[in-house]
Image (cartoon, rainbow over all chains, first blue to last red; front, side, top):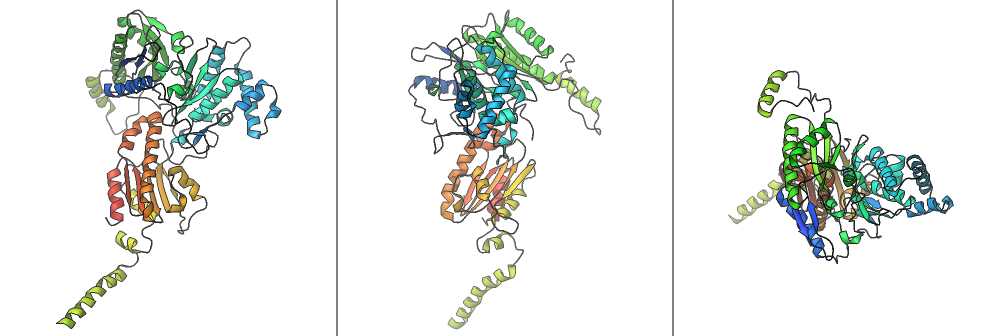
Length: 375
Length: 178
């Protein structure tokens, strides 16, 4: 079964759109969607959907449960269950409260993990980051879940699967993250999308604000991961997720937004290509940036256009794929760029022996330019 | 004239019966359908799948064993696919991609054609869920899902998600004599 390391890789092409919506007494939001090959029409649909959410704040989340016994079932199979009893047993230091053997084992596995990755004196943000990074690096997306008849991965939707077998679907990632946050005394909740096809988390940090986290999407398989979906506010998150926004805590925080905290400020738009080039040559897998003279709504288009130019050339001349997404819009436009170095050795695919490779290289180079050796 | 005419009619009435008897075993689709109960879901899937030259690596599930008898626990497997009562189903067969693609051909044979509408609705629901799943985890498959075919004819239903859905649909219809 092939891994899901390239689950959201999209072809070159970029479109940006911004929409401004006033939500009751809330501040003006800016929604950006940068997706390779997205059309402006699709982006307008997305922003229209968010605007209609804004116009109808009284939605009552009638789709919160979708099974007869009140459970939330994702993908027709994976159940979002409550594991707070395990967090309570941990915090009260009383494991005898747990009677189920699987619960006891989850408690032990989770406790051992926290002993390993959490140190004395860590802030809430640092603890949260440690948990995110461990899950994203060590747990794999269960590719079986895409089969028409899924294999018997009974625990892929629970902390048991994630912690014991290092194997999980989105529900497994989200419920495990929630459990670990609760064990660390933090307020965290699992969110699911409107289609009941995906889930992630919202967590409250010490600034009193909530932040959105999608460990599934940050986990790229084979030990690599990003922070593109770590601690976003709802405006940025809505570019790629669709949920009943008023059914869950509202996420407006930006202080602990990973992209904001690790943002490089580029002098101006004309220096952006150089900044991206440096990140690629340094073999970075993610690059967070803002551009000094592009912090107004129109700046989104400018940045998108320049990244599109770079992306086209990367696609044509190398094996590097870049993907731009919005990270934050609090006073300045912060962007997240994921960089996929698909073929680091630069050799490319092997040409069959019966073909004249030199001749083919000559033809391709003439039409598409020579391969950039630097990449 | 009258008697001769009636005798002719009698002979003409007998001819189709004789032909049915002569076509007998090992016949084509038309003769399969003439058997009591009609073509099996498994045989129907075989005929449909023959048209799929580009189908990826795959797995197969049949509710009936090679002896034609229902396998133990087939209802649970069926439950992964569709949400109509298993009691309404005589037999089902499915071939599906074992890679992370959406390709799938599900054939259902109901006990009674009155369940056809519910079967169609269930297949539409499944298609919608699969599309939603792949929008998140395999967007390159979405165009294939959007061209999927759902066909319900009498007590037979087919959900066809593949890169050659029209060829599959045609084979399904021809196998049912339509």
